[in-house]
Length: 253
Image (tube, rainbow, N blue to C red):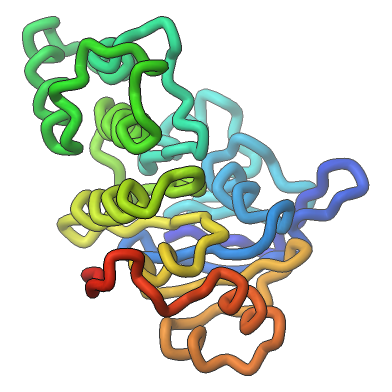
């Protein structure tokens, strides 16, 4: 369970989270939506302890992480698999070496076992054939898949965290990444997806949070989202042309 207890955070004079209180179970499928600068990515960083709130507490499995040092946060971070928007691959390493890096860093596996596991993970996300390529040789969709593979390599997370996983991708690759996110959420594992794309959020989530100026002004399910009379949400949905799948086919829920 993730709990925010009256959490506030500001970058200078910009208050991106304001007295935020919420709870999210590890098995939930949640989309965090809102405009640029409204605090969506900041929520993920606070969960991981990458930034500390100016006020309030963050509890993971009932433990307050706001007072933990870096060593104490490592145990918390291993509960999550985080994929940042930019992918954050090492430019000087091949696809295979990028995924193997985490295994060498956090496990005591032999090189033979590392090689086997890397191949298995890359196969799972559909990029085994690209293992010897460099990051600059990858398409946008492949880059995201490799980032997912690397996040899976070192440990078995309780929950996945995705920061704008389909931003900048064409509709086909965006669909493919959404399907992969759903495929990886097996055995009751949940995820938090930060996005500004309502279309993708509807393919992935069961619960929707809308942020505006650091405040959650909507927290509900799909039906509540689509029938809300809130003018800000209606305008947000309208601007993103919700209602038309780019391929004219149903997407799994």
